[in-house]
Length: 97
Figure 1 (tube, rainbow, N blue to C red):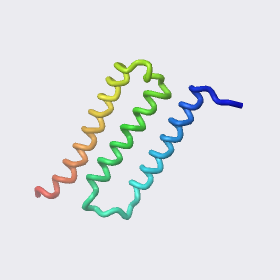
Figure 2: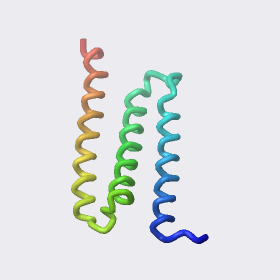
Figure 3: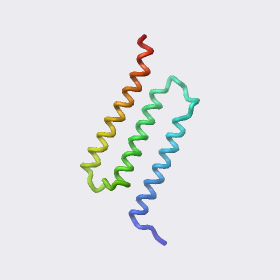
Figure 4: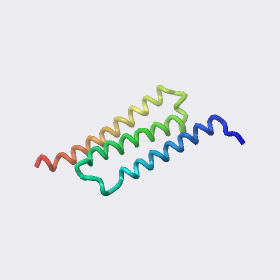
């Protein structure tokens, strides 16, 4: 039985989502050095962004609507940047005291 193009696309997207999930589980390792905490948070935000792009493109079908995909991607990037910025601010406040 051969797979259709859309089935192959969904299977590739699923495989990439699983690979990114493994990357996130590695990033969540509790033994990482505390001095690299902000870098790890940035890595988690980047992986979350790419997972969201996969969902938008493949599962929601926005590959056919690049303008809508770009708008949603920008909104996700802004939200993740705000999360990372607040995390960085939280880490910086004790250093300022």
